[in-house]
Length: 441
Image (tube, rainbow, N blue to C red; front, side):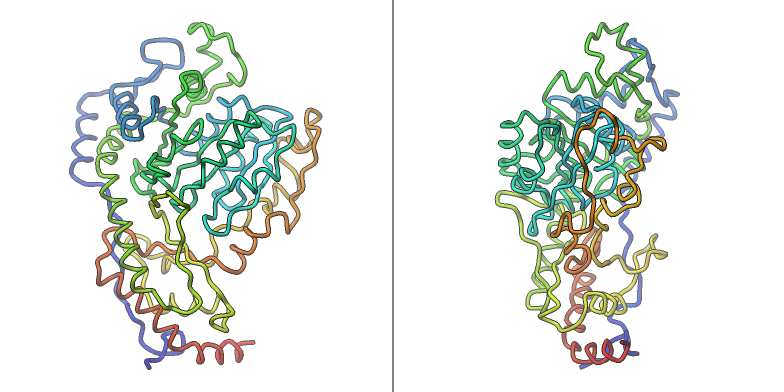
């Protein structure tokens, strides 16, 4: 039995893992074509033939909609911007509540606040790590206006029961698909399951344009509102003849022609890149079978995962050591990835601390110093952001979840085998780790 690197032995791997590079010759040629055209953007923030942007933006939106099976796609400059647009299009406003996940990137939860609504946190399902119809139902009040469902880690939420619940209560459902492009649920692409779906094209996503995003919908009314909010709505509605002025305070969330040109090429590569992630996960999980204390991800019935990260569930009772010690020992056996050396080994305990424990929610300080939207005079409810609000999310963060990225393309079978070897090496040395942990106090 070899000595763990944490205890002075040699690591399983010391050379860097390969970088995740998805920009190639096709993207470079597309950017060059845009530069040669002289049209880097063609948006105008008035009702005009250029209100919808230039040729690359419009072509990208059409191609994205077709790829996702949606009637409409509206490009934006980030997933965050897309969420803001979606909240506005849903008619969210002062006095409203929007049910959100606590176990996600913070933008998913602050989106309602942009329109002075209050985020209400529902707990996550311990299998999918997503909201469920059961956890959402427990948070619905007469003030609930919408739900933001995050397909976290690339795992689709169990959407049919959620949509049935939303229909019963007249609620708008926004899917946050930032981590789940090309994932499906019962044969249907994410982003078409709710009323709107929001995707990310940030540099560390499956496919990217550096920064960017897309919102999909099948509803022409919502599509128009998304387009307006993206591009200076208040300056456009009169010329366009729009009579519904709710949330027609516009922003500049527009995507440039170069980003759209890159996005068109990335969209072509997306399915193959996600298929490679799935194959890598299948290989790795085969090699991880039997490692004590580790439960592999389970899929929602009918779901096909896109694996933004690989989320494992840890059981301390099976190993006799803390999750922190287990992860520390694994990371000592492995190496960082190229281009991200400063981040160390791409593995961590938990994902994010439940969002309601952030200072903003704890102090209930949002807009100005009057406590809005939490204590807005239009809001008749009371928010509760105390520890214990979402016990499953808290348990995942503080005790059970391990996430890692060591399954991305272009990881080879050898690379994946070395990741698995690190887990097995730690499993073979649990006794030594118990002694080490005990000595460390």
